[in-house]
Image (cartoon, rainbow, N blue to C red; front, side, top):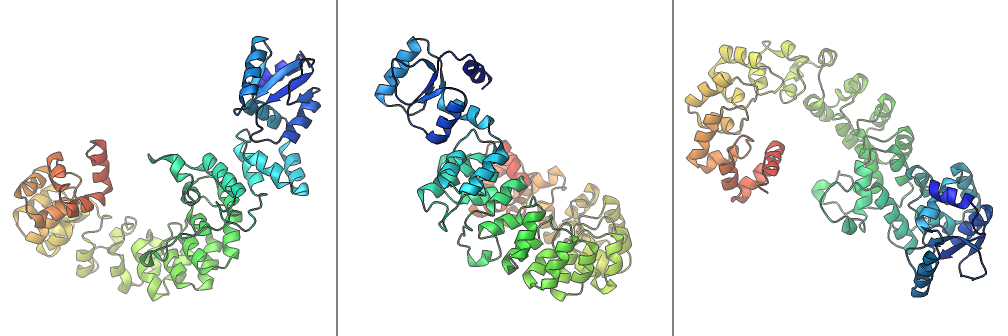
Length: 455
């Protein structure tokens, strides 16, 4: 662009000749810009003209193409149309352009800027908000389709191996952007897009099924987006927003005040739930169980929980701050907590020494159980304990190998959950659809398989 600017500054000629089709920025804008630079604007060649620069479109007819070669032979400088557009756009004041487009409501001119790759992402998003979708869907008109594709080509993350050109022509790409982008400005711009909906299966009724709901679940939403979504006062949007870790204390309390049952259950799973909201959710029977199974429990939280409700904590993996306060107050509670991953190896060893067989089944599935205890449990030959050991990633390797060698389906179902099974058994298990399904649910095993290029 600097070379183009320097070239035009030399004034070697008085005319800029444009050859080919104008693709993005419209002809009127480029003509005004050319004259502002002090040159004549031409789209047809006149031998009497003193050509300072030839601007070449990517779409030329045969005559224009021949002419471009002839002028090149005469050493007339040339550049691509996109390069000239970039130079033009670099001279614009974004705020002045936005104001002009707002006042004129010139949609054709707006579209020309939105289709230009020379426009920065920041300016594109501001312009995008001015586009009129005419109450039609993303692909229901030529202009809507072009603007949708321009948005997708800028902001769709091509992280996967599927054909981007195929997926780009699907509204699913817009939903993917809403779900995965980390840019709040992109999410804010998407609020202006027609609220595309997908068909959800009955069992997925409370999963996001339209664009605004996909935006609501993204943790990168800013204050203005949250305010917009909450002002909708829509039960579905509230329910999805409730689980979003981005909502603050006031927003949590607003959702609480609306009393939407599904929203309250989702709020009970929010990773950034405030202590005040925690206290309120404890009052509901439906929310209490979900709350105590999912929230990180500190001493402050524990002080709010009735002793009779401690058993609701047994499957909560976030008890490290309070595990010492829970142990050795009640035998049944100790036994039920024995499989909890918040327990340290020392905790488990002490519990085993205290309760022995009463706790054996529980600790056989805990990955923090010391290996010497797992070996001792293995020698006991209890069938249920052996099954738990087969799935436990901390079970010594020789035990896993012995269990695999037995080739018993009742064991293989549990071994398929273990990321430490050897390659030969992975290959063998892949031949069984059920075992393959079980392996596919284990992220560590998936990573191991992918790394070794098994599937």
